[in-house]
Amino acid sequence: MRVRRLRIPKERIGSVIGPDGEVKNRLEKETETEIDLDSETGEVIVKSSEEKPLQALAACDIIKAVGRGFSPEHAFNLLDDDMYLEVIDITRYTGGSEKAKSRLKGRVIGRGGRTRQAIEENAEVFVSIYGKSIAIIGGPERLQIAREAIAMLLDGAPHSAVYKFLEQKRRELKKRPDLWKK
Image 1 (spheres, rainbow, N blue to C red):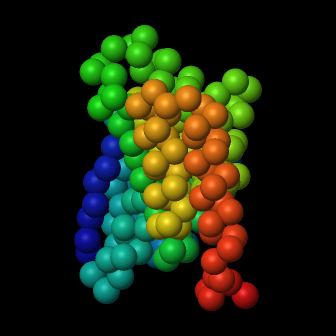
Image 2: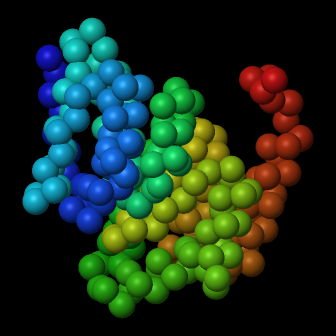
């Protein structure tokens, strides 16, 4: 039996469990793992068989994603082998200042959520801004586009430049023949 431990914010434990334990039960069933949650500490223990270690990693990624603010529905996309979770620590750009952290989160979200929506739609990813991090779920190429756009915003680039970058990347992706899509 393999055991993996991780910690998520206590206030997100309820989202991992879901109404009547639905999310936890689905996660255990689809990943063939056993999950124990401690709502006092936020600690999560994921147990898996020796034969299926990748299942435990998938379960941990889904739990991390929910812990970073994603809905369970979006987090379950990580069961797909071509989907990945990336977490960007905002404090790397702020030096720990709460005011600067709030300002940078606001830049990524944009007025009325417009910037976040533009990143999600153009890069075809899911973005969550929670606590001191920005998390992204998407395929490898699309993750890279979203990461670059977010880095531009965190580095102080004008929103218009980021929108142009996103639109250009979207056009490039549409021009390429995608052999993997049906």
